[in-house]
Amino acid sequence: MHPLGARRSRGRWLAAAACAAGLLAGSSEAATFRVNSTADTSDGACAAAAGGCTFREALAAAVARPGRDTVRFDPSVFPPGAPGVVVVQQVLPVISDPAGTAIDGAGAGVVIESGGGVGPPIDPLVFTSGAGAPLRRPAIANLTVRGFLGTAITLCGGELPGCDEDVSQAVVENVVATSNGADGVRIGARHVSKLRIAGSVAAANGGHGFSCDVESLAGTRIERIAARDNAGDGLHFFSDAGGADNSIADSIAIRNQFGFYFTTDARLTKTRLTNVAAASNLQSGIVVGGPELVDATIERASAASNLGRGIDVFGAREGIVLRGVVSNDNALGIMVGGSPLSGVTLTQARAAWNATDGIRLQSSGELVGNRVTDSVVAGNGEHGLNLIATTATGNLVSRLRAAGNNGTGILVDALATGNTIEDSQATANDGNGITIGTGSTGNVLQRNTALTSDATDLVDGSATCTNTWTSNVFESSSGPCIQ
Image 1 (cartoon, one colour):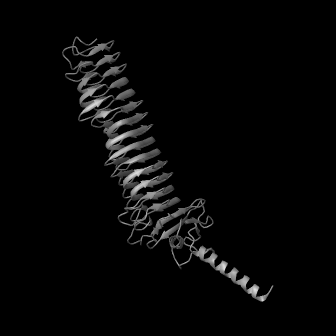
Image 2 (cartoon, one colour):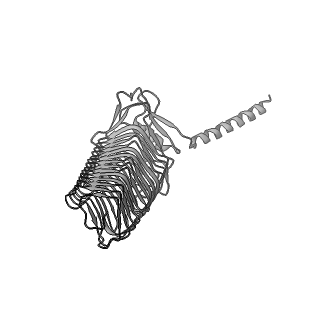
């Protein structure tokens, strides 16, 4: 080759190499930084050499790169059976990247612990996206954060303290947040979508276990969490402008203020709680509601020994289903409220030994078209089933057993029209067996058994025989109209 041609070829190769180097330097492709030291020091580099990358250095390196980077842990330094402990002595860098950094202790044993000398900010792991930018896909998984003065893990859309941008597709999985001074996990944002919290524990924190206080909330999936012994609520989710399509499953909340508190100041739709348990909380066990609650399901849930209500559903409008729920030894067993309150299905429920009513459906206006079936209310301090409203129309009580309550077994405390109580038992109650309210007309009470009440087995609030009583079994009644 002519020397000039060789020089030209070499020049083209160098230009191409320089271009490639420039692209790589500005690349936003994901990088992984592996922590291989338990020290809390920084020399400005996260090196691959043994002991060359601390957690602090890995966070700084991830923040310095654009794009969604991942921080992992060397299992030879952080063995799964004997976790490595990073004792944090100074403030960790804020993890600020709109692309969402991931911190993952999978395959290792990782504890991030306060050294006691952490000054403001006192929250150790803070994910933000910066001013004017949403936070997408932040993730923290498979590690323990303990002993800090503030919140263990914060996910903030935008900048602190406002957190007024969106957060989407955030993941908190297999995390333990314990003995921190504020919340275990906190999400702050304008709108949160597709949040997932799974397999995680928040215990003995000075605030809430899991906290989310946002404008709106959609597509949240919370599963297999445990919240216990927190000074605030076990799970505290509140949205100003409403929420849709959110669920909590296979989770427990024990010895908190409220157990599960999931509410809004607006419309809440398609909410589902399945196989959750709330026990020994200082206020109510399970609270779901807002001004307008639509299409909510609580299934196979239990609430026991809470100082407030066991299960409290408020603002109910339509499509409310409680199935297979158990609520024992609370201030009140199961409370469903709304004005009007209509279309509630409550079936296969158990409410026993509560200080007041076992089951209460209550409206300041109408109760319309609600169904209580195949359930047991027993040994409660006041009434077994209590329907309270100005008017009650088209409601059904069927196959209910109300026994040994200190008040009335089944009470319709309303001007009732066109309701049916059938195939139910109300025995050995200290008040009446079954009572239907004063002035009620056009109701059907059939095939019920009401015996051994301390007061009267069957009480008809109409003095003009405008209700139909047929095929009932009783010893005492309020008048000759009852058959």
